[in-house]
Image (cartoon, rainbow, N blue to C red):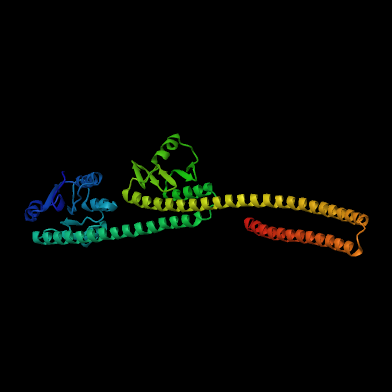
Length: 381
């Protein structure tokens, strides 16, 4: 049967124009001569299985030994992969019924015997040119459809990425961020694990929550400045704070290429959210430390205030007692009245100055307490 290397490949089934037609075709036309319909069907079946060249055109007689040419054409047209092959049916029966049956079976042209060889050559050329034009249009259409589908697919995939970035900012913990990440990469049919660097701590998360010892071992070793590391059908992606290991990258290189781009965007979004979580964590730690200092300062101030009040009461009582003792003592000195009056005024003035000092201290303490309360309110907002 063979594989024909010429640009045009014609199969002729049991037609009496075999030799004439073959001799009149250009050099790039290769002709396969067959005797039976089943031979033709077997040839086509084998060509499809072996992915070899299909005929550019088939010429068949309507009257074959194993089945009619019309039945053969009907069988051919049942296969969608053979529907574009032009077919000419030749027949000694030129009745209208025969012609209608020929065209109804799927033949492109009907030719009655006897015929002119030039006529069939002209028709062969026209049908092959038309078939080539149709094939070119079909190929271009398929290419455009493929491009459109790829574009739509890419847009859909980008929608997943955009949604992930938006939702990632709602994550309040690393675990929530990892759950969101794995849920989104499953849209691409991917599974894997992620190593996260959070402050000085590292954590490893698995998409299916099944711990894999080998990945526990290999993930820290994959951390590097190399953004993508290829490992057969596996792949590792690096960022500042994460290593994303995918264990089932697609074999299709176009799809794998798109997914690599998507995963790098997801990884960058993970990094951004981790930085945000770390900043928030640091802010909370500083706030807690400030709260502790403020609370401790407030306690100490209250303690100092209580002690000061006790000392003030004790001092006032001591000063009062001392004043009374001084007054009693003055009577024994036989001082003149104006001298006693001066000493009494001096004692009262001293008492007044001491009270003023206490008031000033209380005022300063109140101002300090007011500032402390401001800090307290800021820390606990």
